[in-house]
Image (cartoon, rainbow, N blue to C red):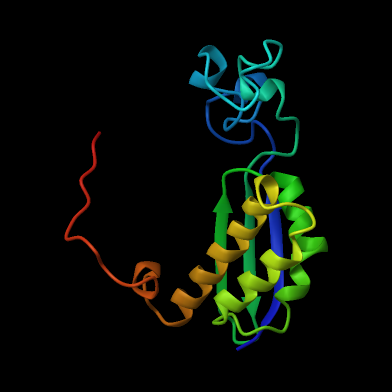
Length: 166
């Protein structure tokens, strides 16, 4: 099995959800409780930008989707909450070369090559978001190809149940 193609999609600001959509802002960076509440963020030390992330994040930071396809019809999918057009550009213009023609089961090798190739850019932020999107789509692809849930290929069940609240 070889990777033959990948598709990238972005979700424009305000496309989904009630949070921030009315203001045309991203529901992830500027809407909802974040728009009305003082939150701690990397720019909190600068009063002009401290109030909400949308004051300093800029455009292009909305969710994005990665789909990876193989020559045998298997595909993997990941929706990532942030990085948007910037992450898609990094994947398309830089990381894609480490995917096409590769065996998708070699996830660690692919990740290592992508990670090392991005060292000149830096290790955090949008680079991490782009790497995570590809990595998660690969795990989804491999799990689907084996007809297993992703948790099985990550080491299996660790708990009988997971408590949650409503």
